[in-house]
Every structure is written in C-alpha cells, then in structure tokens.
Image 1: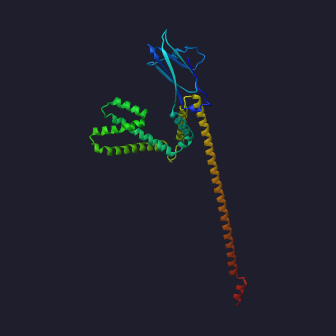
Image 2: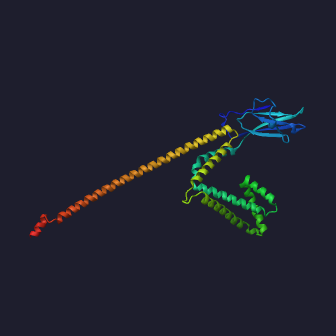
Image 3: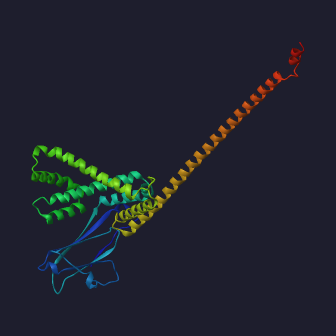
Length: 335
C-alpha cells in the first residue's frame, strides 16, 4: 500500500489548476499484466481488501490516474501467487492553463448573463458565428464525398473536425480540399485563388444570413424587441454553461464548488451595485427634469403676469382716451 497525501487548500491556493498524475509501471516481471491496482480513499479497508470491481489491471505494464493535489488517496498493489516483480510508483504534478481560462471565462459569463441575454449584438454575433461554422462544415462534408477517400473516411474526418480541433483542422484541410474539388471539376490553377476568395466570401455571407434569419424568426418579437421567454432561457443557459466551466476548472471538487459559490455571490453583488447606480441615475434625471420643468413653469407664469398687466394698462389708457366724460372730450364738444 502506498499513501498519497495532499497539501492544505488554504496554504496552497496557487495549485488550484494543478493535477497530480499517479503512474504505476512494472520494471521487471515475466507477467506484467498479472499486477492489479486499486486506487481508493477508504482508510478503514485493510491492505488488498478492495472490492473485486475496484481492481484494475495494468495495460502493457503501465497504469496511470489523475488526482487532486489536495486529496488523500491510497494505492493498493497486488500480484497473484508467488509472483515477484519490481513495481515503480511515480507522482508528477502538472499545471494546466486551460483550467484558469475556464475559471475566468465562467466567472465572466456568470456575471454578464443578464446583460448578454438582453443584447441584440450578442444574439446576432453568436448566431452568425454558428451559422458560418455550420455552413462551412456542411460544405466540407459534402465536398469530401467527391474525393477518392470514400464516405467512411469523410464521415470520420467530419466527426473529428466537429469535436476536436475544428478551427485548426479546417484551416489546414480546407484549402487542400477546395483545390482537389476544383481540379476534379476541371478548373485551372490560375483560377484557384480568385475562386477560393469568392467561395469564402459566399460561405461567410451564407452563414451570417442563416444566423440573422434565425434571430429574426426565433428571438425577436413583432415589435423588434427580444422575447422575454427567450431572454430568460438564454440567461439560464449561460449560467449553466458558466457553472460547468467553473466546476471543470479544478480537479478538487471542494475548491471548484467554493469558486462557483464565490462567483454567484460576486455576480449578485455586482448586479445589485449596477441596479443601485442605474436607479440613482434615474432619480437624478427625474429630479433634474422636475426642477427644470418647475423653473420653466415659473418663468412662464411670470411672463404671463407681465403680459396681463401690460394689457390691463393699455386697455385702461384706451378707455380713458375714448371716454365721453373726460375733460378733453367735453371741451371739444362744447366748442
């Protein structure tokens, strides 16, 4: 039995994205496949007392598993009968950058989920990107049928390009595929570059149109706004994807769960701060609008009062000048 003890989580947070790889190999043995290994964490079990289903055989004399650098596990090794063999157990710790990328990307998506679900730019950009990828894959799959490799190989390459390294694979394979198809059609090599540029632009536009059409038909309402049910579904989908990314960012499930809980807490606090700021700006805007309207109404009332006073004085003077009882009018009549 070999005991593998991990380190403290609080004192070694820098190993969050690390993975410990345990490897068992047979150095010298006449029967390398006869060695069994049990990898567990049950300390109460005796040496070699694992269940039959937990024992694993070495494949070509080698066995390897990964574990968290914070975990504590036991490695039991057994050999049948009186077999003798030199067994080497090695432990190697590796750092994986993609786990940090998963953590950062998950936290960002978790925080921006409500904003992205209400953004038309996000819908159009994501749908157009997916549309371009789908159109390119469809053309690639249909074009590989024209090659002499056969449908089986083309389907295998299509699945491989869809699941593993799609972008890099397309960049390497697509130019050769287009050249082979054009040669089969009978196009000369001088026309290769112009046709490739035209076809590439057409593929991009077709994929972008497909994404644009999907957004117009499935996301937007008749008034042109985002449908509320679609926005809620997209927001929760983004949250689920971000939670999966955060959980996969570490081999230690406890630290991954703590990171997810911290991300949820931080995102909720940031959303509340943003909501309070927006409410504060709205109240300031309403206060300024009400104040400006009040000043405008006061100035209008003042101008109206001045105009009414001037009209009153004008009417008074007119009535005095035209009245028959005035002295000037009486003298004029008498004369």
